[in-house]
Image 1 (tube, rainbow, N blue to C red):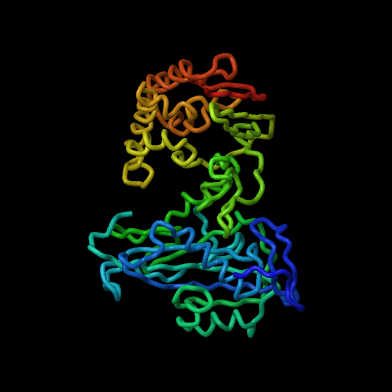
Image 2: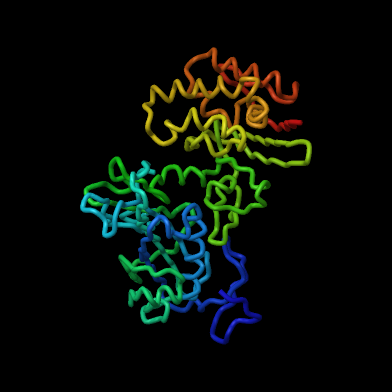
Length: 410
């Protein structure tokens, strides 16, 4: 959208104060609260797909254009992206058939209760779907932007939004529309023919986007750790943002970092970098006992260490290995990162421990490994690498009373 020096008469000035927003012009909030949901659908041959490898940028770009045509601020828009591959177009009869793709809010009937394979074709087709939800008092049936969506004219969609998309599953509601909650209260829901909600449709299909919702939801857990300093808080997905912060439609981490509650202790982790060192400050204070969601382990790792661990853990990460095999793989992770040739790449992760003595980045594998000898190998690597007398090395069983601690790795 073009930049303007002032907003036209009859429009409201959005100052950018809401999380995920920027200064902009929008229609005033004067209508009954409405919920607008729709799905934009297009397709492209792999050799001609402009956005391959940049799907999050694709979603963000279209989301900004949707906000523009509807005249609403970005914080009132939720969006999700889903794709899969087919060998020909039109799709063969055995291809997945999408029955539902929408964004639901906690408390709504279709909110999910539970939180790929490469296609062997020379030049397959990408089937693309973008689900949108707008909760706003700024829109009404008959408004120009809403009419554009109802018309479902691909030429006009190309003109105003930038993609020749079909509009599917258009829904406009004003009855019993509640005030929207937090960003984390929304969840994407997809369902293929003959499958349950958020269930991947069998073997032999490469899916992307929100096709693995549990992996995405863990990235807005308050205990999720990510160093935003490296990319100056620029992001492609929620997994590029620390704690409960999320990636806005403009590709910037937004929202607040809530204290993480784990093992009866509030944990707040902050990393700062200089040219020669990385300092990790961990602050802990007592809190009531609580449970916390398990965090998928690969994302918090430093990139060099992730390259070491990923070949060992990939089969478990994508669900291709059994629980027993993954228990053994967890021990293999501990053994591999403790080897001399890998210690340098994994030093930051090995030395990153909580005030109660637990590893931060490596705790998932440490807890999952059932063999004490492999745990001992990792604690020995910790003792040889990390600054002594600042943090108690993890022991088995693990203990610790909390407190405040700072660890610096040169």
